[in-house]
Image 1 (cartoon, one colour):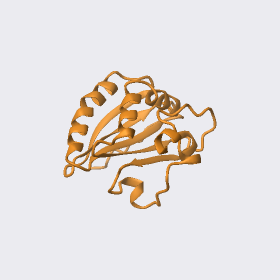
Image 2 (cartoon, one colour):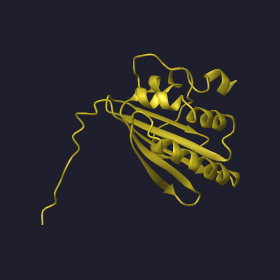
Image 3 (tube, helix red, strand yellow):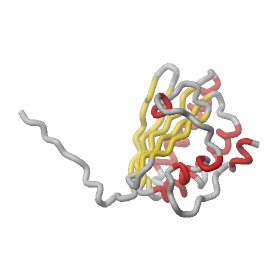
Image 4 (cartoon, one colour):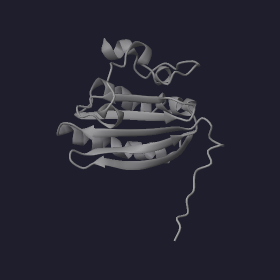
Length: 166
């Protein structure tokens, strides 16, 4: 029997952004952070923020627990608006003050070109970090828009570079 091979017609999604993300437990207390944020994350994507086309849960690993998601966003602008709104903004501010014994990472792939990555408190390399050199996310590579080399206004970050690094 021949295989039926299909491909996606993405012509209606010229600005599509696919995001892979994960939270990995690094210390025992990280299990509490992971379990505490889980229900809130489920509610946030169940509420269908504008621009979120699809959210899929992913288990990256079992020991230590490493859970995450794959998300499809209509465009970078929708993703940026959501990350700067509540409740996401509050979770992010809390995490950046104290990772709670977890590490968090994000890789975004854009139809318009470019890949955005960040790895916060990730002691074990994940994804692109396994083969590409890592540099501090400062200055010109502090924001997603700059890492993707996109024109347009850079929305104020949830936590400024000065706040994060002192």
